[in-house]
Image (cartoon, rainbow, N blue to C red; front, side):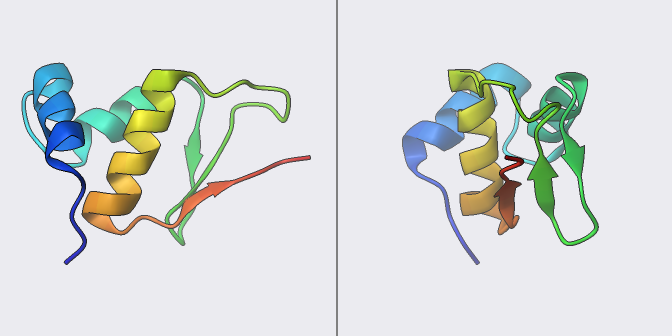
Length: 74
């Protein structure tokens, strides 16, 4: 099983209270991200600039839970 860094796990616990997928997923969805059936995230708009917090959630889900990453819309 993949595993994120202890620092990123601690950050997820600080922000969401656990290292499950619910907090980071809900956070990304609330910012307009869409999760595909093959576990890739799509940005809200092609011109959207990914914030530091969004990057942390994306990286955590990829590292800890083996999500696919995100699709760059150019």
